[in-house]
Length: 487
Length: 95
Image (tube, rainbow over all chains, first blue to last red):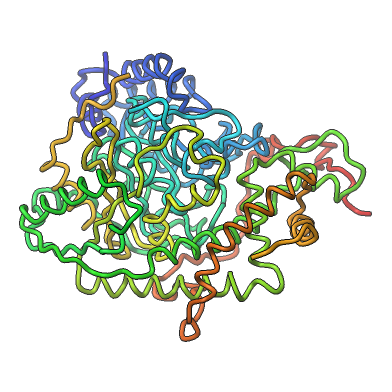
């Protein structure tokens, strides 16, 4: 069988109606993975035995007439910075190359409880620092639409695996765009939830005040369903939020978007935005108007300054969070060292890659005496201003539309020697993390050369339902070719 | 923004990283370029804004500080380099 064209909902239905078994479906996905993975290189670890055992458990439940979870039998890939019990979780770093967590992240536990099948761990930029997945210590993932190009990052392996039909769902993490930008580059749907909606317990920390785990899927409905499963307060994460449960698409999908108020910030369409992206986004804006939405241009003046604030705050948090990797208790340790200081310095200098070291240096610099006020403190002040700016916009509008990336997927190696150039490609996504609001990236068209273009739909705090409603309406209207890239 | 070799080595020391002279040189160039870009916010007048240190509008999860026993201790020790009896063996860390 080939389950590649089935949605998560169709897989569950197909299992219940006994059109196929979970084991058959899982086997079919591994067959595809073994065929396509040598080309895409999206996975760092595959867990076939565990996946088949889980599939058999689901088949047994169905055979016995027991209820099954909402993601029953759905092949799901997990970014390699999210802990999976007994399965290597390396963060694509030499530092953690042998690390197998003793517990599951809360989101992984929830997926398993919903009877999803964890098929493997996906490649990423080391410790989620990067926008191309080229910073992985182990392999370079290729964009399924053009194998000379990057899949975006840092959740590039997750987005590529879904786009290549090697997984139905994937989890990514998004600190400054790391779900949305790869989703845009790979032509799939990715959501960064509101800060606090999804537990971060078991996510290896990079920028704790900014990051969220979120779903990547082939379509809006699957993305919404995955969010419904993984969301919710968690006693193991004090930044998860009480009593706020989103309904995803359940009640919203058939209502359409008539009378929805949509803002389009002019600053997101300035120079630096590739013309084909601009044209595709404008076309989507027109579709929203035609569907009965009220669309208006607005000004969000702090967009470019936000990029600086983001890199200051995230690097500062990274320098602190990554302080735990000292070579003493676990992780990479050099064979020879003469004293404690040399042990730590060698562990970190040999265990971390170039970009991680650069961010640690940057973070240490902006937190150091004499520079704290000029950089870190000011960035935190600007962060508040940006958040207030968004809150004000959402008093008058339901959602905001923008591009997900100013550039189309770039060639492997094209930006990897210029860190600032790479950072600038995050300009449309980082402000959303600073404000803690949710945003989704979805395909809205293709360039002349056949590369996917991503539209970003931004919502107010805990406004995921509005985002999904708009995204679902546009997805139905655009009717983009859903057969995926040719591989 | 100008960064000296002494500055970069001082920061590397704080960050417990060791840079070769060539790495220090290229790190200086990269950080100078990035920090020059960041200067845009130092020029902004943000005195009326307080730093965004917490979001007090949301209700976070609190729990009692209770002990939960992690049953499978073997799993916890799986990632340690070496064990002696019930102790994790680490390099000498007291000087």
